[in-house]
Length: 202
Length: 202
Figure 1 (cartoon, rainbow over the protein chains, first blue to last red):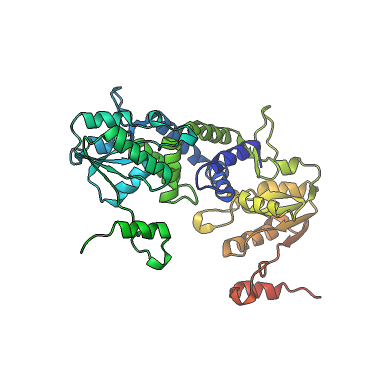
Figure 2 (tube, chains in turn cyan, yellow):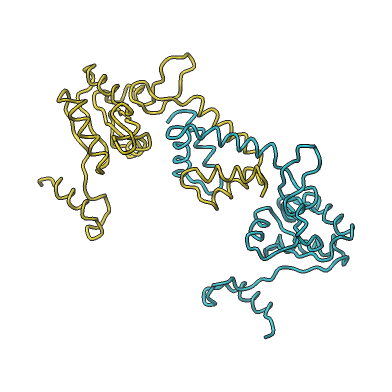
């Protein structure tokens, strides 16, 4: 419509989950209908860019402290969390999903990716050195691998088992099976195979 | 998760069409997964805030010219558009919807609202004075009211007819009836009544 409106809409369209219509709606909202809301968003963006860093312990997002010390995330800083139990996840969204379930009381370690020779992601690109250090420190007693079941995640699990943990702590992997509420008739073959493999005695 | 992340997510949630999940997804994208995209959005917002103004003729959005002259929108500036035919709309999104249909070759006049005594919107709050001036200039021969059929829009139509146009130019209102592709059995009573009222001889 105008050069600056089109530019705003194009930038918004590249955000995840926004299509042409929703980007146009938000662009109209911010530039024509409620232009007074635009600086608020710009400020929140600037603040997030400036402040959000990675937790020095686990790699989760953490606000950088004002005194220049190392950032520490909410979870690592929380004395109630069981610091000897570490759940390894690929990404911050995965961590948030587990946090929201309310089913976990330990701490985390975020890899920020998974091994993928095709995409040029090797062990050095992942947050693995600090995981090895955490294990070496002796404060960790158990590691849970909360990674998916595709090929790259499987490879990452094996690498962690063989090259990082090396039998130093108890290691487990989250269970795979039928999602809660799913009808057996609608489950795919791989899920059913996992569910049968991970059956429990009654 | 962190104070600045929560703030970004909250601001995003207030945008139209974004709920908790989509706001979280975009906040994660901009602060953790692709922080390099954040300045681009901030810049597009700043540019839109700074540059987008209202067309001096019709009230549509228009980029402010660098030389300090009055902004003029694409449509008013386009010599191919029929400048004597003016379509009156309530908002810029309504104008965009008509533009996208490709069914209209005249120019527009954007009211930026509709009469609503309850919400304190009177004729002075709407972009009506300039509409009266456009009619007085003698360059307009026909006015089409493209307003909805609810009470406030009806009142706005009557006001424009009686107090602004005062018989000076030909006046019409867009047709109401069955939307294209709708089954008669699924149409509501008001739509069917409009469709019957606006029947055409064959």
